[in-house]
Image (cartoon, rainbow, N blue to C red; front, top):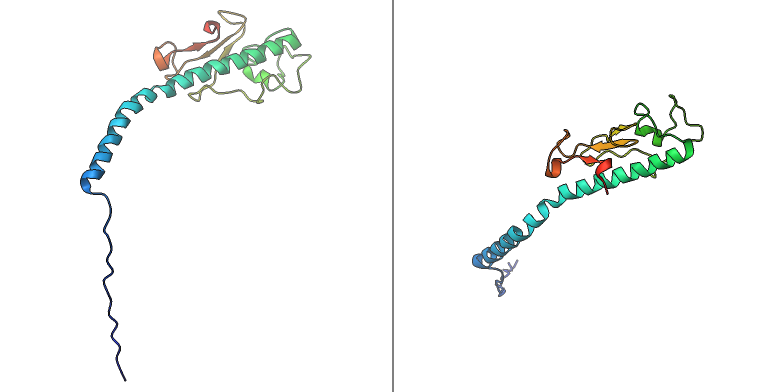
Amino acid sequence: MKTRVCQIEKIGIDEKGFSFIEIMVVVVILGILAGLIVPRYMGKTDEAKTVKARVDVVAIETGLRLYKLDNGIYPTTEQGLLALVQKPDTEPVPQKYSDKGYLEKKKIPKDPWGREYLYLSPGVHDDYDIISYGADGIPGGEGKDRDIKSWELE
C-alpha cells in the first residue's frame, strides 16, 4: 500500500486592506462631520412637534366650524371634542349631526406630547378655546414648553 502525501502549496495572497492610520483618519472625518451636522438638526424635533400641534388645532377648529354650521352651536365643554366624532347624548343634543362626524380621521388627535387638547366652550378668549400646554404639560413656558393656543394662531 502506497501512502500518498499531498503537498499543500502556499498560494500567494496579496494582503490588501486598510491600515490602522487610514481607519483612524476616516473615523476623525466622520466625527467632524457629525459635529457639524447633528447640532443643526437636534432642535428640529421640538420645532416639528410645535408645528404639528398648530396643524392639529387648525383641523379641530375646522371640525368645530362644520359642527356649528350643521347644528347652530359649538359642542359644550362637557361634550368636549369627542362631539366631533361621536354624536353627543347630553344637552344640547345636536339635531343635524353628520353621520360622518366632523374630523377627517374620525378620532380626536392627541397633542404631539401624547396629551389631550384642552377644550372650553364658551371660551375665555373666543367662542371656544383649544390649548396644548406644550412639552412640559403645564401652563406657560418658552421654547418647546410654550403653550399652543387657538386664539393666538394666525
